[in-house]
Image (cartoon, rainbow, N blue to C red; front, side):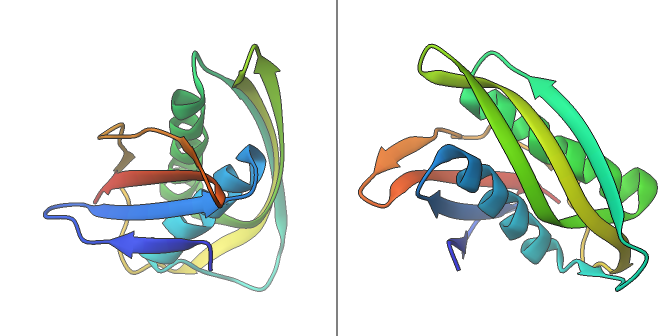
Length: 137
């Protein structure tokens, strides 16, 4: 599992790592779902698409995850398959196109209210890319 829960005083926090940037986004989304205890209905399966732009990679990640929080809150949908495409401007990926596949939320342990920027910084490490991210619950 390429993510682990970190101890945090008031919110939830994850450390996530992946070999490349698209997989970092995917693993962070999967970690967020795991923290919330999301369980999906088997059928019907749904597909959603969207695009996001941002000034930097961290903002793009927050925007992507916030869209997932929106789907969970407004439509009671969550996703377990992610096809992401990142477009770079210079060395920063600043545009994301997403194709998501998932289903209705069957069970949810605790809702995530927001994705935060608290100490958010994507770093390149020996295992690829890594972040620590905090969720407001």
